[in-house]
Image (cartoon, rainbow, N blue to C red; front, side, top):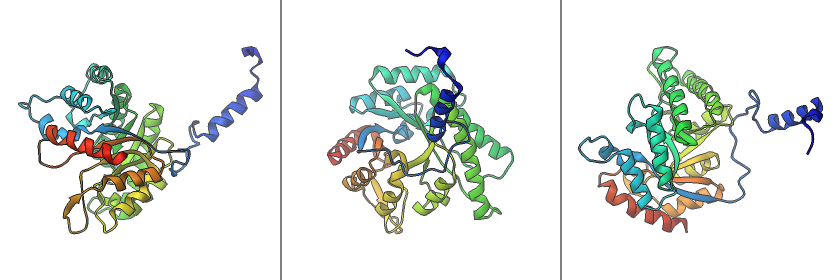
Length: 302
């Protein structure tokens, strides 16, 4: 073993050069690129707590986040996605650690969490609140052991041009991504209306955010063009997380069943490695329907 006294300045410089090359040293981040070092696809299954939204918002339902975690375990999932909307407003560390412990005892990873931020606001109190919300949940995600947060870009505000809106969103994402990197948390931008309603619009933002802790949350149900699956294929190489809905709809807004096999082919072509999260948004009882769709998804995975 080499003595620490022989760790020369040259050795240190060589080491830091390697860190800089991998984007770890602050200031060396580059715009997001397709994730090129994945050699083969690997899929893990999770369920979004948003699927249980009506139950989690009903104090009389008897369903809590722990109940949701237990249901994920009964479905033999790999993970559980704990959407931030269903946590106490000023959640304390003890609550987060208790959920983390409960998930671990059930053999589940906390696959991620999700927030409803909006970086389309101009400088001022509302924008500051959105930045702080995101930073607070970066801290919360670190405590939960959730590696990724689904984030939004936001929406264009009245009187603000499309160009300025783009700048506001990119600036906001750059700021919170820097904070996320300090806590070891990835931020995944969802295709969710507004400037991210198309693959082109989403990727315009993605390419302008300079962070190694940033990528895409691929949502299978949020493109509404005549080429939904083509657009999903465009963003799949950037995906850090994938949320799968049970229906898609084109410009006519008519809902049709999601082609799960086609989704997995798209993810496979991109060598996606990570969680595939069912996000059930239909009106039937999710405790009855989600187990059925999980099995359908398993079959589609092959």
